[in-house]
Image (tube, rainbow, N blue to C red):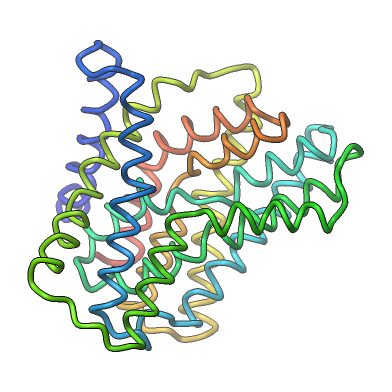
Length: 311
């Protein structure tokens, strides 16, 4: 238990630091968007590039970890939609937004710092292989699904074009692509360049945690909190449970490797669930509440999964 506390205490302390700094106006609220943009658009792409360029590619892209992670995410998506439709009587568009809140993981701002803190730099290649695919796969699936299900949806072809543009404009994809090109071409990284990418990579953890903590000030509980709670439980419990069963019990992946993907699956909903909801104007309150509830509750559920994974 002390080992678990040692892992999560600094992480959530940094998040609380960001939250309190913005709440008491010691840090400007408008600056939080800039911090998160820095992490997503600059620091993390550099981390992706540097990690792929200097790691063992064959060990990074492990389909026995990536496959169960995304199968679990898609299962949570379907479960969330069904519960939103049948249990809460939502319209199809809102139901997809609720399902998306139970599917999309905060891989960068919370997942990356915690897995790195728990298991060290050796976890990075596997974790970054999931992060690199995350937005491209799940945003495309979410966009296609909501366009098909809502009554005022656009054509499938138009949706795929929009999804492709969003994926192609994602700096995380640029970092992955550059890293793969550099890896397979045998690109040498001379010392000044290596130092630059190392420094940028080191900025991810503190800036991301401070930023997500500050961002929590934007989200308030509303009357839709019960739906957000269900989506949060799906994300925090069902997703990692599916990943655990498939990786460890079915595919027999060694726990020392499987735990990277399982712990990442146990992370709370990412800010993109709010971006997704506002883009379609469906389930915005649920998405905002899911981020707030899941992030706070994850202090307990992540501790549970760290215990299960025998940190």
